[in-house]
Image (cartoon, rainbow, N blue to C red; front, side, top):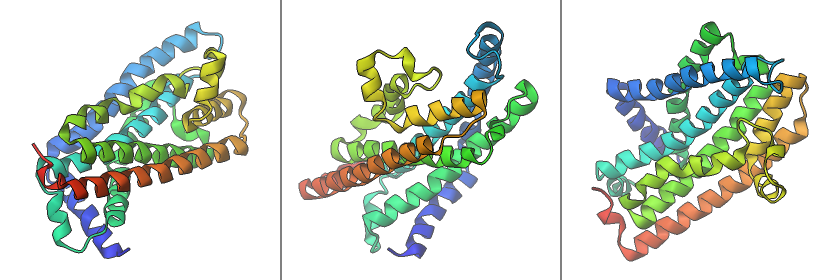
Length: 263
């Protein structure tokens, strides 16, 4: 793997973001709106729910972390879609670029897009609602790493679908995380789910991440085994995502459908 190629691929997307104010505005707009929406909902539950009455901002903190996950996945997908929309994906292979280098570049650049959107939103929540996600402390880093790894995994799976099925698969890019949200137990404990759904939910890293977030904010304790479990599950899914991406790419190359990608 050549790092200068990864840097060049990443730099292309960074320049694309820097040169387009609408793109930057779009990255900031939606997370900020989410913070406003869930901020007021969080205040309502804080005043009305016995479960959250001792901790202001548990729901808002969950919303911020979930939006971080959402932006991680969507940022990865959007950069790949940019290549499809501009019919540039096949042009990348004029240079001796490996698929692993493309994956690494998209993974690296996705975190920049994600932070552009999430940092202003997280900061706005402090003066408006008195909620700071940074109060989680050092465990926040581990939570974000697990969320980012899983978000990139979803991005890999969606882009694999785009390679395999073409732009018609594009709608899945926007809906993929909403499919998993009910099982992720983002805003409620896993005990709410039926027993058979709890079994399925425990196979997702989201449950362990958000259960631990609530544990930290409500009980002021940190269980490292929960974070370790979330990381291992996220890592397994990431490896599977990479394998699926490679299978989709080589399958499309054999069928000769890569050249037809685009609108």
